[in-house]
Length: 356
Image (spheres, rainbow, N blue to C red):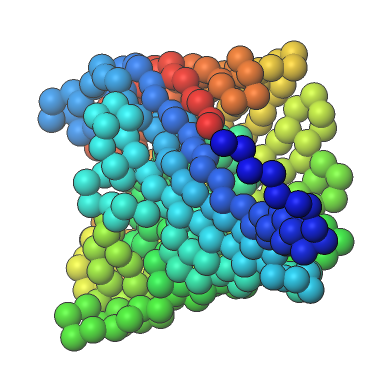
């Protein structure tokens, strides 16, 4: 049986209110899947077995993730936002970048935004990581980007992580091409860790095809997969990057420096300088050739025993979009750590990324 109700002004007002509320709030699910096949080899000590591995692996170009984000219009130009994002490894069907990751390791934060900027609370990318990926042609590629591998990767000297938990961040609106941000991470000191509070700063200016950015952080705390920092331990990191897009080619450059303070282990008494140059060349409308060379220079300080070491990485890649959401890529990487008895590593891989 069909019941026909009389349409009244009250009913129309109720329907309008519901539709208005729906239009002012939204929740979206999205993500990215990156998986590759190839022969992977890092630089290695020649006295040990050659660590070359032929494998299907996840996340060399972009760390796979899925997430949810939502927004609610609070009126007066103010919006409430949330972001929940989780990493995963498609080759083995496991969550996280590794087994030590928390589930929402990529992002877990809420925010208020207006014309005066945005304030976020929770876990989020730290500002130095955002600077590192912004000014190199391979972005946040943990498998191939010299900047990322020499900073946050297994061979990097970063004591923290690419994401900060327990953090507060303020981001300015775009001010005639300039955006800035300040981030603070609570160490939440306990009797077992003695960790302190960390702070980060960044600024980026873009006009036309030119962009320049800088960031600084003082890290006094860390979570898994990195080890805790003890009381009095601190690592500072400053990074400057620039790029210029000529249309037919885009150039990139970065320079950064780490400094460790308060560490007792001789291997941790070390300073690191880092630089990277790169280029992105469009090929027709769907492809890009990506080239990047980076080098870190490690030197012992304050009684440290780590030898002076130059670690260089060169990557050549081609990325081709089959559609707006799907691309395929091929990459070659030469990894060279300049230590006595060490040999170079050569990596060849092809992969596919899909966004949903």
